[in-house]
Amino acid sequence: MTKLRIFLADDHVMVRTGLKTLIDAEKDMEVVGEASDGTTAVKRATELRPDVAVMDISLPQLSGTQATQQLK
Image (cartoon, rainbow, N blue to C red):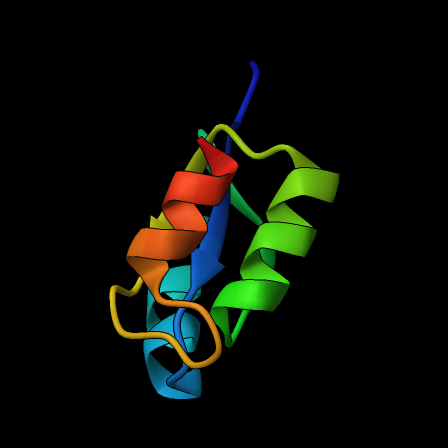
């Protein structure tokens, strides 16, 4: 079975930890990477090539909207 590979970008550690816990509890999903700012999110997501990126809109350095546009 192929797992859905998910990348998380949020500047709040507790939010990322909570989402990661929920996602990793699903047998068909896994968190493959995380970032706490938009610039790092673009860099890491480009390297990791996840199936899905969950972005906080309000990220430091580069907003989640801007980061998503760059990844797109």
